Amino acid sequence: MAAMGYDAVYLLIDAIKRAGSTDANKIRDALAATKNFKSVSGEMNLNETHDAVRGVVIIQLKDGKQVYKQTIKP
Image 1 (cartoon, rainbow, N blue to C red):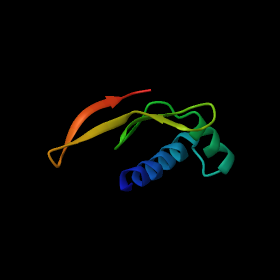
Image 2: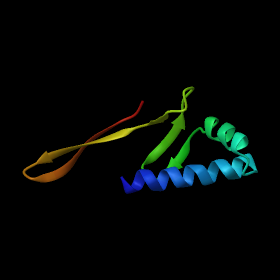
Image 3: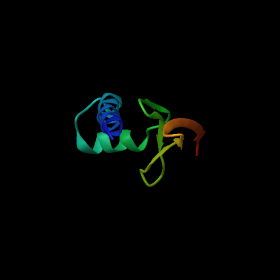
């Protein structure tokens, strides 16, 4: 969960920089235009309804240990 909070803060900082302003409407537009944002939890895009679109990592528990299974990208 901490990684997603970190991503959210840096996504906002990126949008403010791209907007060139702290005006809420300009930031909203910059957020809506987000494509290929490199975050700590992977690359992220925002879709037409402003939802984050990103891949997920599947971890399997095997003999009590976490084992990487696969990454699913949208």
